[in-house]
Image (cartoon, rainbow over all chains, first blue to last red; front, side, top):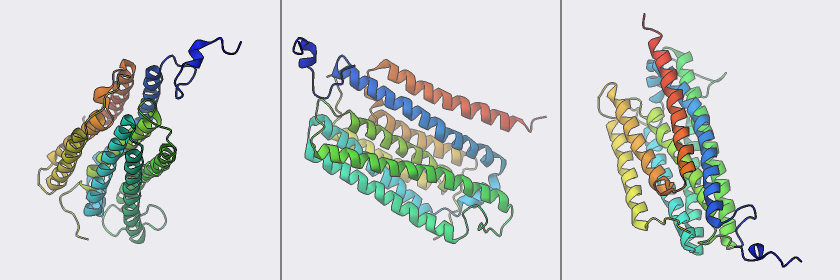
Length: 225
Length: 95
């Protein structure tokens, strides 16, 4: 009796039973990932609009706050994330071609770039912390409009902080996919988890692409050092 | 499976363009353009984001129409959020 269902016996190992074909399964999964990314657009979108409204209201303090950003660390970190997106894209490509060793290598390099990004970010965070640029009781600013400059730093910490959290989660997800890749779980027929983690990684990169000019490049008058 | 596999060269060209655009936006921040500084910076950022989405995220190769609907709906929502909020705050001082 149990052998009487030919459709179940012939299906591919990666295919879940509620999908008719691998293609349908992949399409559904990629669309689901995009639905999640749209909720992420909403999450970051709220902070971006808050930033824009206060920037419009307090442009002077925003300019002042921006001049305490480290232009070079910000620029280098942008490059680091773009490199990580390249290696992530090449990793997804390797999974499509079934090149297991290349897949694992590219994903490991992606993790290294991610850790490099967080390392640079923590150097910056440490500097801001020591200089009393964390909003709250320890906030120190001697120029005009200290409350509004503090507001700029609130946006800076919240936006880059949530972004860094996303990078950290991304590193965790890529680590899991590296482990599964090493075990040989993905190949040309089934590599959807690699693809979806890639989508997440690139999305986080796009958020930084906007954070970089908005926070670091408000004015051409960059403070040295 | 009708999955599109982009060539290695495509990815490297896109990455090189992204790096050039980053250098361009960093350099442009030193120019004195008044309000056009932010316009130029956001224009370059949008070019970079579009490149990442179309090629790295493979939006260009998506064949499933529902996925397109989801992405366009998300961007349209963001457009509503930004445009209605900003027109409100900017026009409050008009009397």
